[in-house]
Image 1 (cartoon, helix red, strand yellow):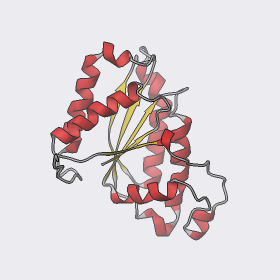
Image 2 (cartoon, rainbow, N blue to C red):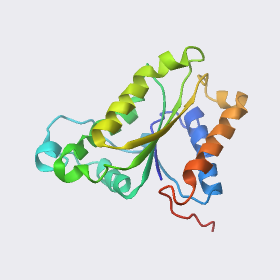
Image 3 (tube, rainbow, N blue to C red):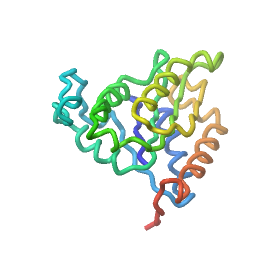
Length: 194
């Protein structure tokens, strides 16, 4: 399992939700690696189309190594706070760079993988309406890349850093989801505590 964390805020609500999720994965005997995009150097797609035409990316940055990690993972978890009805700029840039997998020689490297979406958002009302755009975005991305979307974990009313403390049920939900999707046999290898 590879968690792609698009949060810009260290130790914010998304980071904390992911910590509880990872605890659940480990409790179930699975493994989870996390990439915090804020710690990576990933340039914007420049539209050179070298990936589409030649099967390789024209940019040389941290995305090169991240693609190898994506290709080795059976389950991809995309985590982000919702900013203006969308993912953060960090996660959007990362997803833009997944265009690499549109080349016929690269498509099979991600096709058939499974995915989860974990979203935190400040809105407390009209959650379906407020999340409609970001969920449609993920639907189109996963459809285009032929990635199977298993589930969405949506955590509303988490505007300020630390708001998660006021909602302990969200921590429990994240932990239980980690247990559910972290079980070996769901694309997970056994995790051994050292």
